[in-house]
Image 1: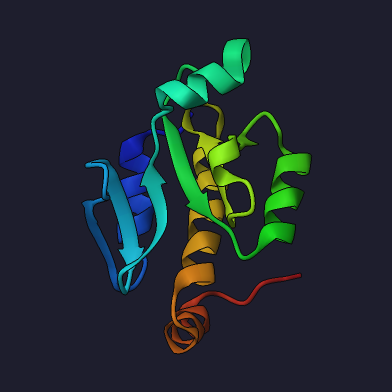
Image 2: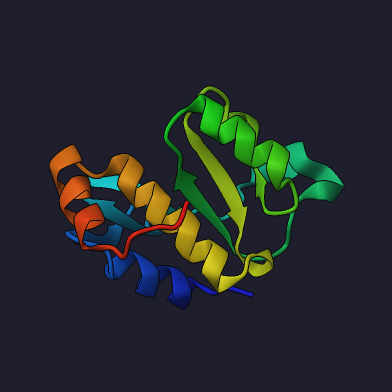
Length: 134
């Protein structure tokens, strides 16, 4: 089970990341002023919309590359990722933090960073990573 401290550690280990309050006072992590992961507690409207399916644990918002990537995550892992009507048509998902393993959290936060980072910064960081076998 991952925690907010895991999100913080993973996000701040990426190049040029800052931690700052979002517009609603929750914590957001940004790369060059572009949020890629943030705290996103469910609001009253979300709770009403989700009803009995509303998760009780900590929720994070997570940017994705595009709407296709969003749909893939929602279909592949509905126990981890979900949305409310607030996120319809927007390239982001909500993540049940208490259901994700730290290694998978590292993958999705890092991918969100790559999706939001400027191309040159992303390429420079990618060049520092070990070669992948895939």
